[in-house]
Image (cartoon, rainbow, N blue to C red; front, side, top):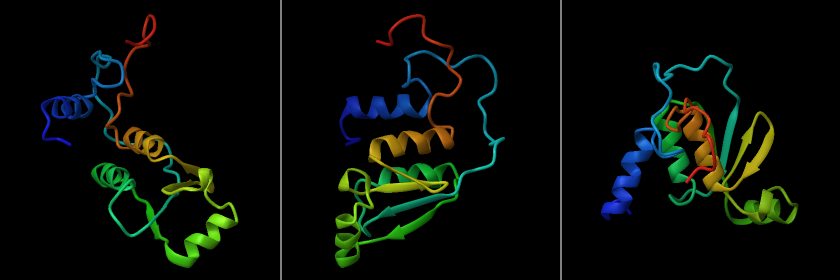
Length: 129
């Protein structure tokens, strides 16, 4: 809900790399290119905009290539009964063949791949507030 001033300021802080620890990143340029080989990403979700939409927008913004697999109906019920989904829920993402769940964790992973998450902060001297 970006209409609320608090949510808007949190959104702005996330986009400016200040969210992860509340401090500015280490001096130097912010990385904009990937140096390692990109993993093969396969996102599985329903055909609706819901929990996976933030992850899809993050990956699109970072120009990260991924494959989207739509599921639903009988195919979803059968796969869920077979235990194909972690925590028996969607969205899930296969990262080089390893299946992971939880939309928040997947969004953070996508943000790190898209350089939207603070990657260059110095280590905190104590507990992060």
